[in-house]
Amino acid sequence: MRRRIIGVPIAVAALVVLVTTGIPTTAAVAAYTDPLGTTVTTPLFADCSGVDASGREYARRHGIAVCAANTTPPDVALRTEAVGGEECGALTLTAMSWGRGVAAIAWRASSETGPIEGVDLTVSVSGRAGTTVHRFSGPTGSTPASEGMVTYVGTGLAVVTISGTVETAVAACSLSSAPARIGVR
Image (cartoon, rainbow, N blue to C red):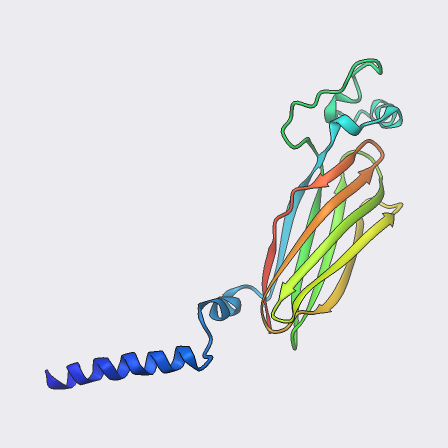
């Protein structure tokens, strides 16, 4: 019985030393349980109030029902009751650890409302080395639109988020972002 009582204070003292000397804490340990790569897909939502005459005409010619733009007469306002807008495509965000604190980030936007005419997207990558922000803006001329980058984030947990809009032939589609978490080695 005497040995057990002595062992408890020694175990507590050892734990205190480990925590105060920089041994990985719960957050650092969690980074190594996060996957080395992940893909997150999030919907794009059309801003129905911003659909102009050319967008309505394109929707009518191609049978695109978003915001009822294909059937609503030009002199009648489009429906805007859907909270956040109506789904008009998707954006896929992929993040992968390449080792030595480097991560590869790629995005791909697809549209259900005609060709993608342009993007205005911001990708934020936060890791041990700090936060970096990359901007992708301008015309694309393709469906789907995609791009990527490689960046140093440091080892441990990295969180990647993307926000912005994708401009299609019918409407400007906003992104409902979901972060991607990876463990970077």
